[in-house]
Length: 360
Image (cartoon, rainbow, N blue to C red):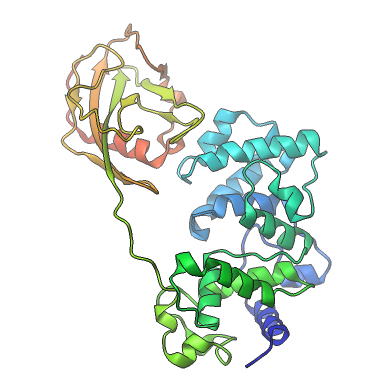
């Protein structure tokens, strides 16, 4: 079997010829010419990529870096604008921590990200994975970068048959054994690219893999079965209600959610029950935010969060021009863009728009 140094060298040679072209990446050819990655862009991309696909992140990253090309610009941005631009990426605590981290780096660190993992982990919202990724990719620190792609490659390369929840420490140790002292960032991206394009979750292309010779799972014919997953735990179901109110001039009633908790800091329709998990509000007993002839959409909104499934009753109404809501504020039609809403809130908007409308 190839030794760790030989496998790492083979991976780097493969990466030099096959690296993905990503908007946040300095590719191997540019790196060879002395171009260095921008820590800001590395950090921003890694935060965006947490539990999100490369395809989904691409346009968000391009938009963010066009609006805020460096950490100082992002730190100075209004919270509401950043949260609006983040809408649709999900896991909104990431966006709140993104701003906190940008402001610490801009205000306390002179706009420069720390170079080592320990210092990076002291920044808001930066955990072990992100710290390792920034240290390795931006600064070539020999950090061990382990995401889902890396875990899958290690599990197959070394035929680790424990379920993934139990195997994580071993997979990390195996990844560490392969991490070289030089070109650590390129090595980390090489393993991730291999997992994303060749050693894929379904139907791995073993015949095309640069590590096919030493791969123990391929030799045993079990590559497609690894890593083994623990049995899934059924997500609970929550129910609730939202109220979509519109005036004749097109203004809509929105409220900004609390800074902490589910969809924290995001704009949404006034609602009840669904974010507490108590299932107390099924629709009929929910308190409307403004007096109106409320109707119930025949279409329920269904959405899945990390830890639960959500079923929303959507109530909608046309309201008078002089209506005074008890919650939220009316946003003028020209200032309202549904694309700025989180996905579940946008689903409720679509359900309300599709329903028949009564007059005020």
